[in-house]
Length: 310
Length: 228
Image 1 (cartoon, one colour):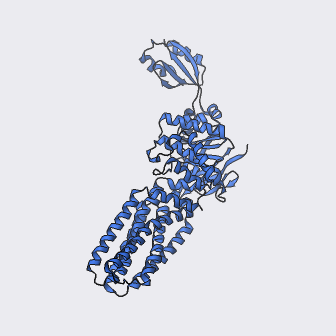
Image 2 (cartoon, rainbow over the protein chains, first blue to last red):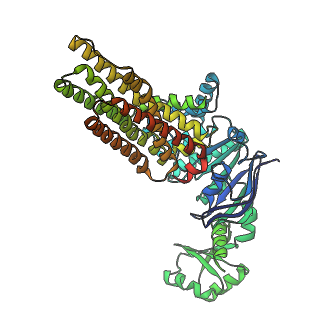
Image 3 (cartoon, rainbow over the protein chains, first blue to last red):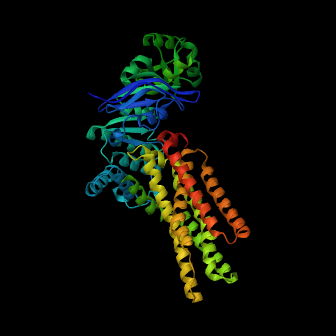
């Protein structure tokens, strides 16, 4: 697969503040690349550099083989969904898309057909003539995705597309992104705080903190590398709350992640038989023991906290 | 080509914006009041039109842009619309030119309308020959549209390149206050030298055009994005 986005030793300084420090990664064609990190880590700065809105202090950013600081033609092949939708509230959905279609010099017949198709795709065809000012945030976000696809780009850059949306709207956007990748073979660069979203749709992720990329890899690889295995212990109903609270002391060197109504989730490297043995010694009745699956959130927490330590 | 797309969109957007209608309405109302009051007290009505064109219309050609560019440049930038546009193939210069051209049209249209209406009213009402000098015509039809364009352009550039939202508005207001005060001072001190007032604004226009050119050459996508 060919490289669609290539960032090499990207450094960006704002005065004395180092926003990005020697950032390097590449995104292959057809890949959904997740970009995660805490607030102020440098995600938006990286996105702006990829979109050619910021010039690097050093290093290079290439999109489809072109250096974005030297050539503007990449703009015809890239679509963007930024943190603010940038839609015109006083224009209807059709007019908003029509305006952007004209910017991309799409001929009028093709433009109208594409707009109708895209509004259908994002589920807004019945609201095409309504002013965008009357739309909900989720609808505006779907329209922003339609606008980003208008000129049939090869790359889609998305900066927190589900931020501030309710769970239903988040699911809808997630499904749309999934469809884009499977049906249109788009390459997607997705920055998000929503780790569930990243885990479900991204094939590769990079974690950024304080301007440094601290880890890159596939979700599965990172889970194997950084998420410790955890065990879910389902207890018998007659185990008292008090006894459950004391369990941490029964299990030295074992991290209790969560104590729920009838279950305890622990993280450990030791054999589960040892845990069972210890619990039985303290009269804790066990109904079932099963291996839990690690989440990206654990990987993220593990990475972020690992880096915090000197 | 891309700036024409901006012009079309801005015009469509402008006629749906209450601020623009309000600003134009205030302008027409105050100009009419000024015109009505002044014609009742001026003995030499034929000469009045020149005073009206120079002292009445000129300050307005500077104040309307300050108000209008608040929405078109400042408001859109704050809402992230400008940043979104900059991700497309449109250049910052084309974006600026398209918006400035539209605002010039919106500003100049009521100015020239009120001038022509005033002229017609005087011709009909006074049933006498109203002398309109070549200088007045030059001022209204050449200097004023250029002044409008240069003022809007400069205020627009300030809005685009500065993070201080009120700065563009302040620049417009300062220009307007200067225009009014210089106008009043000249009318009192040198009443017979109207042409100097016009020449002064021609010079101001040239200066503003040069400022625009200098500023525009340095305008980059990065500058606009970072000053949001």
